[in-house]
Length: 604
Image (cartoon, rainbow, N blue to C red; front, side):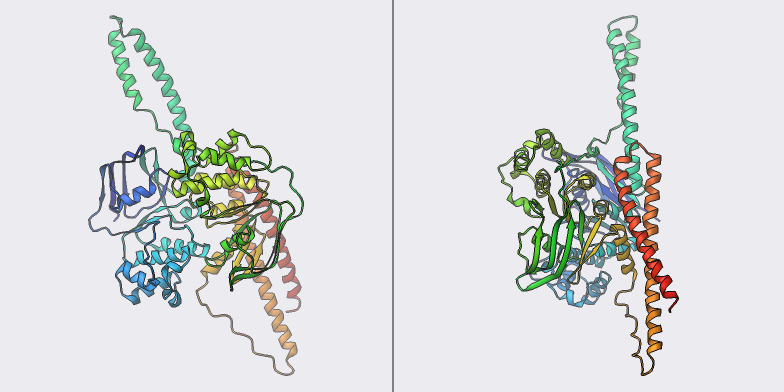
């Protein structure tokens, strides 16, 4: 039987002049799986810390049900210098070593990794370790603050599978809509200094938000007109003895009317982002790599890599953590030397590079506006002050915020500022390493739309599936030291990875066929032909499945366009165009596989 797990009553909290919560209240049951959503700076992480008792409210109360065990995955690093993964799990959980190893295996952390120093692991593997420590505490509820940051695709799928089988409730702060869509059945909205629990998934809430906003706008407009008429009547008749009583009645009616206004979701207003155009695009390749090897010193992480990127392409570099994605971007940006091979950019190509720590180079004394104007002034072409301010606003630097100096900005704000400056630079090629880590859902979607429409070339590393799926038409996967290129889009790539993840870990490979004996060449040939036929049929079946998934998405988006022709065109239209290309490519692959099957059926 579900019970009230967390009760928040009349909560008030401010950071200096910034009011995060003012009279906020909400009740969270222990069976709720809630996506915690809201713009950056609205207090999502602060709320998590207050629930856990790590931060205090100015007033109001947060009550936790008696005996409820809550586990908290926060953004800070819990590991100590020099301790191994095994030691960290035992220290953080207080459980026996065998039990730690047993739970670690659920996240595919094997014996070799248990002996590694925790702080030496990539961010994704550290997050896996922290999740294991949470589970070992056998909690009733989970609070996960940005759990997908730095997680590779396979680890995200592992986390999704875990949350799907989790028996308790949880709160998840995340900007990854695809992750929230697959894991959460409700939404906790943090907006306008208040809290609201909404039943239904993230898409239900997002679809209803525009309708709610329009309804509130119309209702408030009607109430404003009515209030004006009432106020006019009161002003005209207050001093007249014959109508003073009626004026008092209208004044009371006016006072009651003020409580009927609906608070509009101003902090979630749509983000619009436009990047300065580059002008005429040169034909040919933007980048050619041949026999490229990347790594550090004598440590080759990946190679040889052969890669050709056409101008205007949008390329996602994907792969498990530790496979060299960021190293490849650094090598392409020429901030790190290639170990061998060749790397050649197109003639007169200007390359801009964004990575996680690039913001450290921004002068502390610069203001937001002066830094952005400086970035724009160094670029070829002309960018107006209004364009600079518009892009600053899209990255949440609005009004007086553009006057802030860099010295008072948080790390996330500096990262946003650096990304905005890069986008103003009119670079022919943008190399983006995790550009969405400090962006909320609305800004992430606006950035994806802007980059998709941008006439330049983009190569990016990102763990945000919605962002990659909206933007990338070409996938370069780094795996086991090699680079593979896929041109059938992200959905087909994701389907292949999910199929692989469903296979049991360590499943035995098919037994090799016995070597043919003397005089058995004909039998061997027929066996080989049957194997080829089986492989061709599997390829045809897999391609058909991927094609159906693409067609299903196309049909759903077409229905959305038909239902909302005015509002959906800007976001749905470009995705439909990308789907049309992906479907055509998938159909071509299916026809090739079908032709192979037909040819082999006559010989097997």
